[in-house]
Image (cartoon, rainbow, N blue to C red; front, side, top):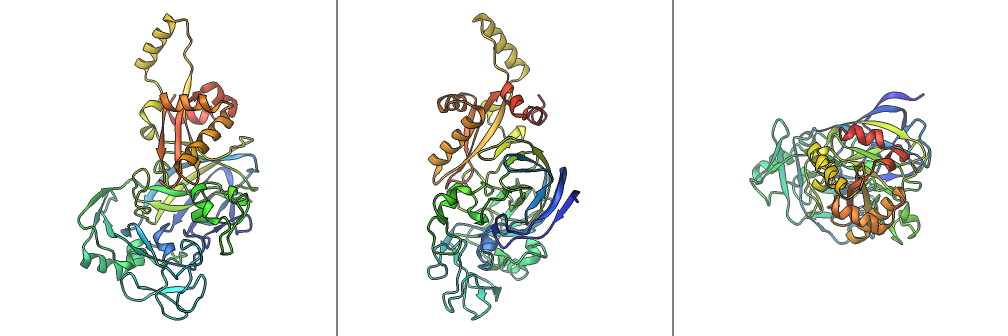
Length: 429
């Protein structure tokens, strides 16, 4: 029986797919409350987590069928970690099979996906249970440990002594959920960057629906899914199979409280999952990693029948809309109507919509976003380019190859697609 509210504190081992045990179903219009584990560095230090991240078990949504979409309204995203650590990585040769993100192995005993534990503090603190050898496939190229103030408004990077103090009680400072098996990243006590203050603006790096085949969660996007093609480990796929990613690993900073993500449904029930909460991130996530944190999220899910998307849509918060994509003010509208009347033209009623694109690189991601927009809106690519240039903007999510193309689209088309009421409410139109 479907429930109105489902509470999620269980995680996958990093693999998403129709055979992965799912929770629910939750009612159409119901709520998901999730306690998520830190997404990136911790799981990368834990080879037993096979997907590179540690996301929640997917939740089935009542009435969602392939060809539908699920609107996921992000009501709240709250950081619970008191500290974290991050920075660009180095890959350690010999400690993985083909892909260090999802196929870690012990270089000493050769065990693939070894169970590990923490001994001491520092970059060699993660060791293999079987033989005791250092087992993390990654080290820091330049790392920091960051503590958050009591209101989670800012983070401050710490010195060696403070970083090591936090490392000695890493799970408590990270506030790692009980069912998480990751080794907390703060155990490595990086401290190359000291005394830097960063504002927090938390968002979900992972949010989406379940793919039709087993895909490692960190690779569930076009730019990272390509790494699975002909890979030597058990999660290798053909080039055609790798197209089945659902772009749930977005790393788009606008996927935050107040926004709504609209995700395609590929399996019965959709299988909504989330995780990889970030305390803050600039466009591009240019370090390759940001301040991953544990946290509590509140979502509301609603089924949109027959929308048949090619990829996710985003309704950012009004604050996050690009300047050119924002709805016209009363003053702007009056000026536009007056000028249009001079020329015998009726102005188009339009409203903003964001199309998410992913690809091997940014050029491919941009083309993907425009192709998805053209398919949904029944427009040509040249028209999409014009609208994107003069009523919107391209924004980078992850520099490797995720982006959003945001621009104003005709209200008539939004009504035809069944999206108008949602867009109207989002932007107070």
